[in-house]
Figure 1 (cartoon, rainbow, N blue to C red):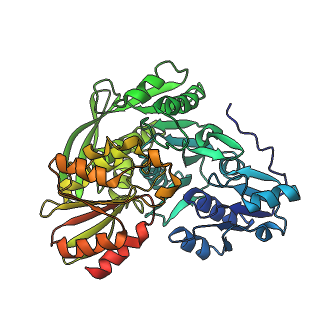
Figure 2: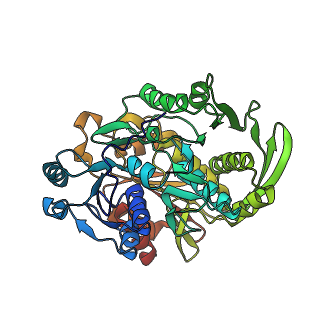
Figure 3: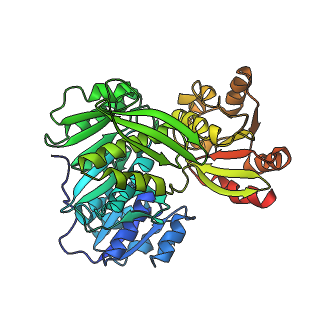
Length: 474
């Protein structure tokens, strides 16, 4: 069994306070708790849409900044986000008052997963999209799933749902849990079914190297219950090796010959992608979706495999894939002006950047794909991917690289260099430009773009609201 103990959660709870409430996961948890009838409030340092708007619409009070006064009213339970340090003034006050507290996964176990069969989606890439597709398939099949996902599902205008069915879809994050619990979040859950999309190095602020990442995922797969099913991307060498000697049932999916579930022929007819699926080498079905890129087809394939295990009819799967509207910040078209499309995407890891660019390219054949990239994550602001990023932009016709924000928080000798990336891209024959700030990117693009172009903006943050500002200028 995993670490399912809720030692800090009292039996009777009415008032709940969340420190760092505006994170995607914490915000979803806050709204879910509000729907369950609890008195919910919280605080955060960075309050901006869409999560701030989402919380406000739920009537959840949010304090801006951290102050011990915010928590002095004495909530029955404090949920501490993983970005919160032990020196946070609200944490210090919480401990001084002797308040009960727990991490986000502990709260999810107690208040959401009790009596449910969790379906956990893990892996370095594709967790949010895969979780979202699966939740929509199960919903369309009338299975009334619960879910909590790290992105806003357009079909639900939400990133969580409390359903009456047996199953709950959870996005399993490998990031650490809290300042008092440094193990990955996914180790807190006890899955009935699980998907492992792949294992690559990421989160350089908490993992030293790929071996540490593999150890974390290795602990996860070893703890899979013997009666459970683990679906693994067969084309990912790290993931496949981790699942060679497990007690649970393991099925592989992908393009490779040893995969039980395989992608067959793929045809792109914008805005649709049609793809064939085989099971044990025999035709299973032909599906169509608005999702772009092979990486998203693999995500859909994993969901089809899980849905088949749950005996969802193929027609129901096909209908769900056809009507799936996507997720905010994943290939999300923010607007069009004068034949120019502005798209937002969460891509930041070199693999995600490469796959996203390759995925959208065939859907915009009449113009250029202009990549606008902000290296903002704890990993991308470090030099760990400095030599890999130049290989990620081959599908782009024009590349705009911003100086990483908050670079002063990274030790000088470990900082990522945007000018060096631009230099390396130029040596590969790419048209690339460096920009010290967002304003200069906007000024450049307004003069440069033409009808038919796609501007693909990639960042895991708000990027100074570049999307709306650019659309107003175009």
